[in-house]
Image (tube, rainbow, N blue to C red; front, side, top):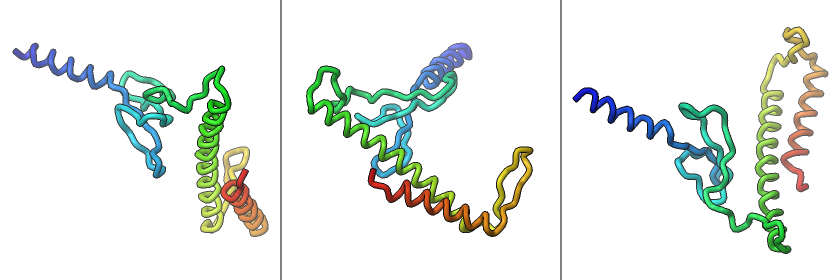
Length: 147
């Protein structure tokens, strides 16, 4: 009886261990997890037991906007739309990183850079001001650009 229960538990566990879990970002920018990503969403396979590395997963069904090699202008427009969406996602990520850097520069009291030997090299007031200006310029370049 114990062997039967153990066998049933192992079979159930092996089914769960072989399950694939995906992660993706929804339309509101929130990270989502599930066993099936929504159609047309770029999803990645989450590293689970027995799975090493993260792999990009293809959408769960072929996208209608996927360009065909011999397609016409409609396929090119669809491909351009997908590329534009990817570029926008990258731009939003870069903008958030630039804003975070600027916030740290403004709120920081004793700012430093790590030297070649790993030691802290504290910045002078002029260097801090220069870094703040550079951080603000990065925000303007990444967040406010239209190209």
